[in-house]
Length: 266
Length: 287
Image (cartoon, rainbow over the protein chains, first blue to last red):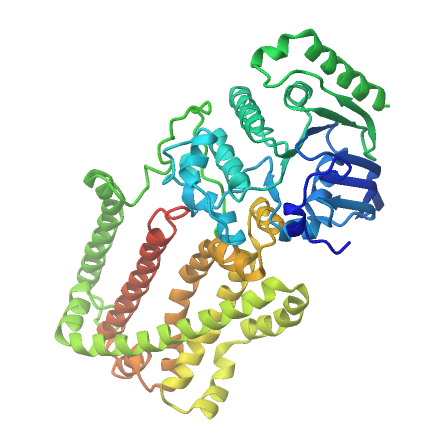
């Protein structure tokens, strides 16, 4: 397909063109004792504007899946399609925002300069102070990452991921390194942010409740080699208040995800 | 070599919207109270003074002849009688040392940039670089004289040869020691190699570059003095040769002290610049 994602950006949204489409994606790492298969024929469609969580035990290939979508890794087999083109084309169109478990900020840059990094690379403009306000760290423009707490650093990483106006936000256990209170605060923040903007999100986590609270769909993966064993729709109304966590519908989703995880584990 | 580390974590923040205090307060170069400075500076000064007094006393009590071991007073006199002689010689040595250092560091860093971007070139270029390192400079010196004559040339080249390898190795490691998460972020944005280099690799390498400089600055002085010693043409090496011929032991000691002071001064200068440039880095805590 020779349509660049730039063209796609202006193209009208159509229901049959998912933001992300994985077909038969398999991946193996070559190790000391042969190939280690981490992804086994994964099919996944993520619609434009959808929030999809990928849940699975450690080492099930969640991160590999995300890296294949981001174009950071060429899968051994199968096709990854992003916004109607290849992941590389989506990279060139600056369609991705990436948040990993570790913030990966540049320690020599101020908070503001860190958030400006994608703008410099993409040649884009954005109101950085407003963006920092949206992720809850207004007024910290001039601080260095080393002067911030882990939760605040992760907020900076989120602001950086959103700065250039990506169409697809990829999050790899973004709250995994945070303490429980920070985690909860970030969860609420992300929910609020996403409900305001509705960009496509793929959210990798091993926290079942977190996935259920945030997502439109929860995709459950089996232990290595990672396979998709369940695709559970979360029919909770939006905006979701924190109280949603006590509703029967929410608890039902959590129970179904847990059951799928259990059945996938030998 | 200094490894790049995350700053130590303070654990009081529960993702509150309060910034933590800067983490490295205690040893930070700024705002250090006078008593803390004294606590750092005084002990070595006291030890130095005690040693000098003991030296003077030993020479007097045992009546040791000055050509064997002059008392510190005599060394001081030698320095005070002819300050120009030492200053001039040191100046010549420093020109050769720093000239070689700048030349070698520049070349080594440029080569490191190439090697950091290509494993193939790294494998190809590392053995000759290692070969330069392991060859005794003294053995090469006659060749350098044949090629570069008796002037400044061979002295600069010796200082360059001796400082080349530390910068090369450290810079290659530093240019590769990028945070993989930050690299991912730049890659999904389709950042060019140049953008990754200027925005990520180069700043990431700076702590390693300064670590290399702290090693190679005193080395460059050694290289220059060795070359001068072999050629007898200029600088502190020549001064030492002449003083040796004259049995002027006090001047020999004077030369040793001048060189030691110069080495300390240069290292302190590097640390000073490092502390100013790498304010974000944990090892940037002054001398």
